[in-house]
Amino acid sequence: MPYNDRKVRKSRSSGWTQEDERRWRAQQRREAERQRKEAAKRKAMLDGMGTEERQAFLDAEQERKDREDAEAAARQERYKAQRIELREQMADEARSTAGYLQSELAAAIGWKDAHGCDDGDWIDDPVAAMMGDGGFGEEVRTSKGIKLQVNICLDISNSMYHNGLADIAVETVRTLYLSLYTASRELPDDSLVVNLWTWAGGETGKGVRWLTDPSFGFGEFVNPFEDDDNPLGTAVDALPKYQSRWTGEDTWMYPLLKKLEKWEDMHGDFGAHRLDLIISDGVLEHPTDARKGDIIQDRRDGTLQSVVLNFLPMEEWGDYRVPNRCVQYPADNDNLFALIRQILGDWLVSI
Image 1 (spheres, rainbow, N blue to C red):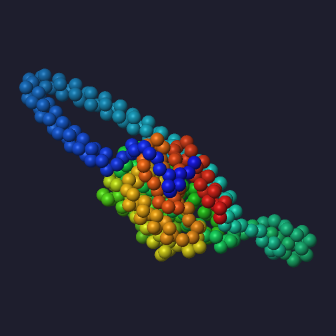
Image 2: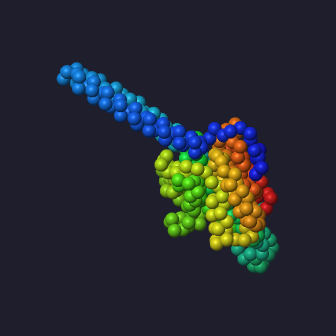
Image 3: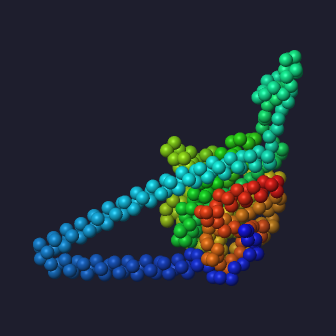
């Protein structure tokens, strides 16, 4: 069920906010002070021991540390195995989604049969073929003049990481891109353009990057994922993998919409059908952000649909709204691919 730009929930969000960030930093300072005091206490205790007693204590301490390290390593190996299994599963889902998209996109963008050819894929008119007057038919790519532009946008605010959504968000972006890339190879040239973006970066939460900018080494629909050892391929280098890469200490959407509008003005096709897929936790705390976003969205003329896939559980959604011409869907592991197929299918049907 989508929630439009005026959807409001009256509960306060339990997502990661600026106040949570301040509390967390204060807790980190307290923890550092506690560790300093414990280190001083341990040193005083060791200084009060005899040589043999100190050595026995240190040996027992090292044995305990080795055991804990071995247990941690085993947990890490189990985690890696689970990640490989998840990526293989998502690769299968990506291929399935790509197959679905391929047929839907082909219907929207156009294939046709050519008749009366001198050679081809099948005999269309046996008599004409025997008389040397053609009679063959073939399936050819053609464009109905329909152009599609899809923006896949990843929220890299630190609330995404602290809310435990980082892994699934990155995998979703990768899988979406791979699905569309796979489907695009069977379509007429230049009929489908897909951009990757990150947003809500930097200390202000207003940083936006266009990852498929050719200056980063990725051209339009160059597949940056393919790898012989991994069915989903390696991640785009610019996608965040570690906590330090989830930089946004706040979450602002209007800078993303502004960048999308600028890209459309400079590189886009005015008559293209556009779809924004925005992956986020929906912690949009600023009314000013929504108001500025309204202005930009109303200015983006033409066929446009902006969809926010909110991975935060609905009971944790706050009293926020998304800008005009946006809809918001609750997403999770269980409904993700069905939801993606539904969104893309409905978009293509409307075309």
